[in-house]
Length: 258
Image (cartoon, rainbow, N blue to C red; front, side, top):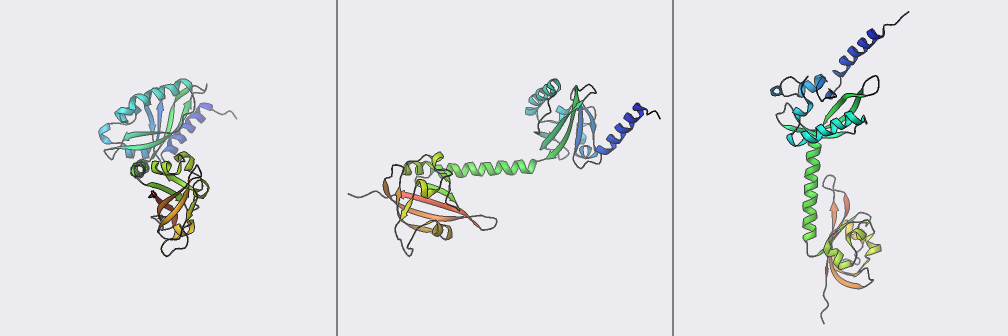
């Protein structure tokens, strides 16, 4: 029995055309010139009607202005090299009437000879994740700035006593740089030899993890010099579940009176 290869090809293409409409995520294909040739229902549902027909439109017409030139150049480079592209993020104008951030996963469409003929893409809306990450980064930068501006030495450790962060005042007090302090055990680089204070007989990590502590301590610096400090510590609590994740310590050098 002779098989009609052209009929099989057409049948396969039709099945493929139907299958993309069942994808839960937006799916688009562009030819080698960046013209949209295929789009599934999920894509059409997101397309803003004021943008006109999606099929036949340049893919870059939907991008933010500041992303068009570099996106065009990157696409044309793919069509030249034929290298499989990595995932990218782009700001796309959709039915919401705003630009939203989409993570785009791509693969090259090739001719039977293996030459690049276009790109197929699946889109994932990551706007909320991106906004949350940027907000977290802004908050982190603000807290770092505030911590670095503190006149007193500030050291943050995890629950095991490993230093996670230290400000410039801590560098000056201890003699260790922030890079040297970070990731090391506080008892190893900067052992705190506490003296009894108030109703506490010791000022150690376990005590610091349980309740706020205040007292006097002798701190050993990088040069193995002992200096007197006032120390105030407080457990760092996870705001979601209340568990103790570390200790925040503030140290102030006590100047000897002669």
